Length: 241
Image 1: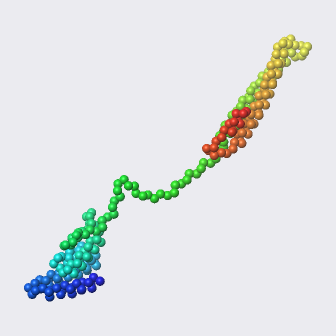
Image 2: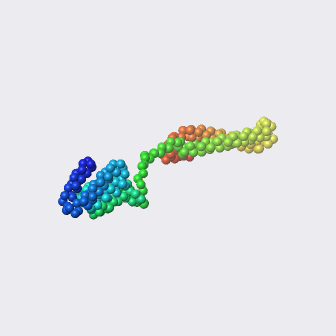
């Protein structure tokens, strides 16, 4: 396409000397030939990717001394070349064509303004697993307290049982028989004390055993609840004993 256009420009430019006088025909021919050669040379250099050399030739054929057709074509191709060239030395490549404004190739992409955070890819936020349900702490505490009271009752019953046995032995030693009872009053007191101690021992053992069993049942029967749903039901049951 460029070759056909160049031939058309050559034909047009070669016709220009006929319009000139005899004195300036030779100089005009030389000037037109230089413009044509510069245009054709720029086409070949641009095809060979020698953009700097091609640009120099385009500047030459875009001079005001060249015919209008050649100059217009060279100016157009010069602007297109400058627009396609990468920036050099930190700034865009520019070219100045006689009688036209400087052209500039597109510069690098603008740098993000300070203080503006770049967009970041975000993924789905993992959902924490709910805590596993546990035994009701109120029931566990109530069972332990009740069982502890039961153990205390059993210990008290055992102590009073031993005391009752000792007092009964003392009563028997003071009065071996009803006929032989030298210390009758002391024997009666020891007998009464033994009866009281035996009754206390029996009651303590019964209540202690019941409390121990109840505490164990409450402890091992504690229901499972969510961590934030602790209740005081077990504590109320344990406090009842």
